[in-house]
View: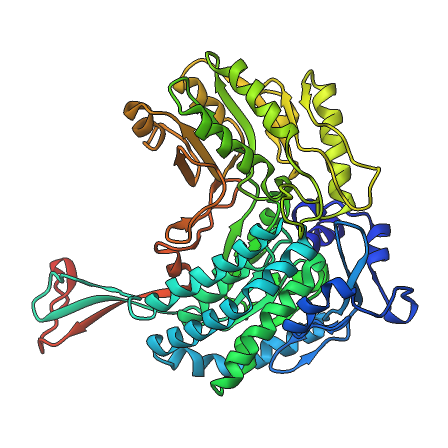
Amino acid sequence: MSSMLLNRLSLNRATLLHSAASRAKAIRPMAILNYSTAINPKHKAIFDQLDLQFENKGVFNGKWGGSGPVVDSINPADGSVIARVQTGTVQELDETLKKMEAIKVMWRETPAPKRGEIVRQMRDALNDKLEPLGALVSLEMGKILPEGKGEVQEYIDICDYALGLGRTLNGQVVPSERPGHFMIEQWNPIGTVGVISAFNFPVAVYGWNSAIALVCGNPVVWKGAPTTNLSSIAVTKILEKVLVKNGLPGELCSLVAGGADVGQSMVDDERVKLLSFTGSTAVGRKVGETVAKRFGKSLLELGGNNAIVVMDDADLDLALRSVLFAAVGTAGQRCTTTRRLLLHEKIHDEFIEKLVKAYQSIRIGDPLEAGTLCGPLHTKAAVEHYRKGIEAVKAQGGKILTGGKVLDDRPGNFVVPTITSISPDAEVVQNEIFVPILHTMKIKNLEHAIELNNSVKQGLSSSLFTRNPEHLFKWVGPSGSDCGIANINLPSSGAEIGCAFGGEKETGGGRESGSDAWKQYMRRSTCVINYSGQLPLAQGIKFE
């Protein structure tokens, strides 16, 4: 990859366009840092409950270490330094992978139900720390506290799911055409799984991958986003205690916090049999190409440009509440955030009037404070993306219906959630900005809505609001939404863990979480057993 793409790989999503200068401010030798060496008293209880300090090591492979650059964890609500993390190096990633190679046979030979029992204990340990871990996510990432705790709950839920998988990783028996033969499909562990996760879900995305990978018999190595290292460390410490309690090697849940060089090495390394990457389409394309060249497997969760369609027969109150959550939740930084709102021309004006009023009532503020609905953007770079997005809307003939302002009068990375009116063909509508800007446009009928929904290059999530059964079944049918998620009468965001999560087209095609997504973490073998004492060949071939 080019150096620019490597830098983007380490930062993910809204931090992709950090300049080299801004990165230098965040990553510098410990000796020249001028910050306080004390934890903010307001956050001390969180740190104490999660065994975190002001200075933390970012590598775990059975023991804690790290000799790479020191990275500041920044509070996006006020710009203060929360804590510091000494990250890992390429050499430490190599050492970690060597250790994982030494223990992978032990783990894959452990019966799946027993692996499930370990994941169950991890589930209980996470549940015990739900409150402080959720608060840490809110503090470090910037999402509001209910969403931070909800993210941890998502990890807990996928552990419940993985526990059941420990007894249901079923193959299948297939009838053989040859007498005296028994034919089955068997699933076995794939090997070491690498996870490169993004800042916007610093706990849940790892949880989706880790819980399923572990129950499938694979060790996991994790590189989280450099701006949410504390969340990665806190989770790993929780899992470490479970492993120690059961006499298992810590290498099963390894962590190497680091930058672009560590991410690049993980992508390149043949010992990483499956690489799960969450981030931008541009970087994900390079990741997929690199992993494919070494004949590894990749699981890509990339960009989304999600639409909600509201028909004239819809429950407008239900649609209004859904759009508000889907467009403003996590300050517009979910991969499933609604970016485009397609309104039937008969209800367009009425809906826009109500939506603008709802937007203007949103409380913007500290994500840890009760009543806040919109926290800060994660980085200063994301604020600049927001500014440029607003400028692009105006330059491309769009109108700002509400919002469009950066809150420069307060510390932190706060912006006002924005609604625009713009042509669906505008370039700014075709690309995901990853900030709370919602583009609205009129539609004539369902066919028009489907055309616009499917017109972008991304295909993650979509939702249709209607009471018409004909519309419902067309939306989810072969000529309906082309997204991996096609909802009816609920937001584009807020997916459950029971079904597979992922999207089509430039979203990457990967599937995580429920359904049969577990199969990506295993390899399939076709096994034929001949107990006949004869040698009949398939297709009736005679070779005598």
